[in-house]
Image 1 (spheres, one colour):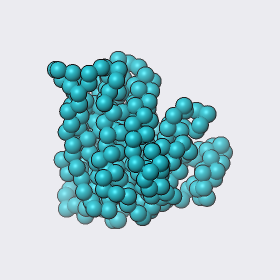
Image 2 (tube, helix red, strand yellow):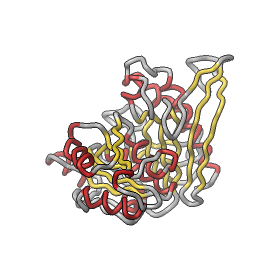
Image 3 (cartoon, helix red, strand yellow):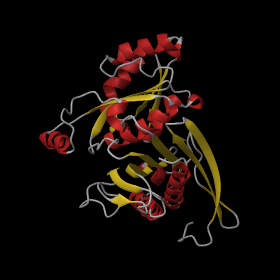
Amino acid sequence: MERELALEVVRVTELAALSAARWMGRGDKNEADGAATSAMRAMFDSVSIQGTVVIGEGEMDEAPMLYIGESVGNGQGPEVDVAVDPLEGTELVAKGLHNALAVVAIAGKGNLLHAPDMYMEKLAVGPALAGKLSLNDPLEMTLTKAAAILGKPLSNLTVSILDRERHRTHIQTLRDTGVRIKLLSDGDVAGAMAPAMAESGIDLYVGSGGAPEGVLAAAALRCLGGELQGRLMASEPSEWNRCLDMGIQDPRKLLTMEDMIGTEDVIFAATGITPGEILGGVRYLADQQAETHSIVMRAKTRTIRFIRSLHYLPNKTQLH
């Protein structure tokens, strides 16, 4: 993949973010998601790739665009797998909360896991802990190991987890261990990225979230030098069969970074829709302008770019 592709991809996430942000705080997550999806799909037509969506808005009969298997790009560049989440955090936008993102990851053809739409158990860490912990270990052991490796007492370890009923046992374990907890209302991708961003103050991300979001987060963490381990949580026969249909022979297998994003180059781009710890949100300014904050990264070079852009919006219904 050419380095110029990274800047082409960030234009895709910028337009999705600009479109979704108009629905911030309006209580309609479906309209926000639809706006982001339409904008992202339209902008992909200008990107120099022969892309196939492997993680998207659903199957062809479930989603009108950015569906799994759809071809994207102008057909003039490399053959690539494309993973998208036009609006990661629909509830966040609807309620005007932090950490909503527009996200895209691109890798060479055949490298991205075709992750089924189900829960995935996850353990995400930054560079200091990459390769040194295991999702197979009990949570208490993982916390103890992490604290020892980082050279800090358990009471200074900070762990983030989605605030969900299914995590009741995990949260109680965290409290019993004495670590500091950051409960997230939503934002699975941003949550998993946080341990690799020093300014976040997060040491580990644990618990379960969407499997497609796990692959997107793994792409980001590869670029950041972190690590994500996952395990699919097929809870009924239909989900088990779905895994088999998508080429996952053992749904119970611990998934490594290589399983999820391959071993080749990966490009990851995200634009903030609402403000967060990693990125600022869309701001509408005077004189028909809007400001966006994005991150775009490439695994091969470990280059991380933070991009602040000003967009001229002559017509609110026609973003450029």
